[in-house]
Image (cartoon, rainbow, N blue to C red; front, side, top):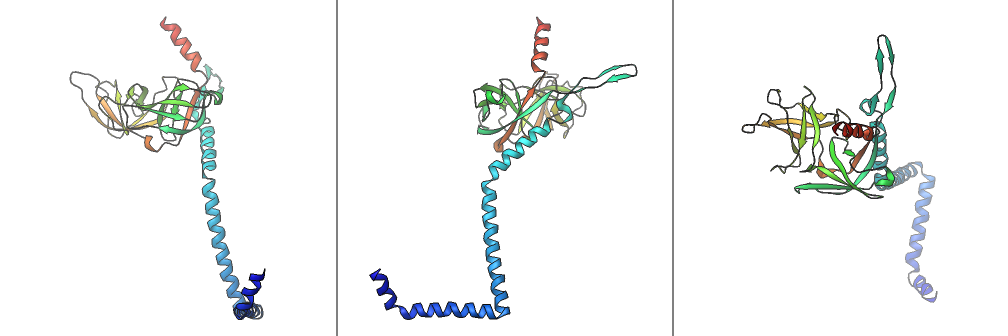
Length: 277
């Protein structure tokens, strides 16, 4: 306290000047409308800029929550698409009884680990058995196919990526309905290009045609986008050329995926297994 008084007494002229200056400015602003308007405008601009910066910062902090919310909403909307329902229509003469039964539901998950440049690539997601994830489920992104669920724990799951030599997806060309198997690898390590095989030579395949899921497996609904044809490679002595497909999914930027639950998968697989025995 003694030091404070010594400081004030030593610089009393300076402190008096500051006090008189503040009082003078306040009186000018209070009694002069032009200066008052100028000060108010300046202060409003400064405060507005401060609020804007604060709002931008708060919005940035909320991005993760917003992304989670949007991904969950996308999963819900995918479940309302036409190809997510099973056609349970019965038609006889003029009588038609139609029941729309949901066949596919979608579980949103965030990618927490990913590889794209290996021979066999995998992903890890932050959803597991307690969220309804099971081995063998199909996985897609907002733009295309991702892969198949491989192993599952309570809270996590690994996915065999489409960029894996063991992955084979039933796919078709949308323009002519010809179907085959989509694979990756076999000397090709470009994460954006896959090969559509088993399409007969007599099928006319053109550059730019759309490649989609065939719907023949229990993994994916029919008609989900996979990519576009960019060329064909003839194989010597083989009646099935390899069709190069530019994939829609950018695996290097994956953040959210959708795991597909097929309500009728077990019924279809049991029936087909029994038929083969």
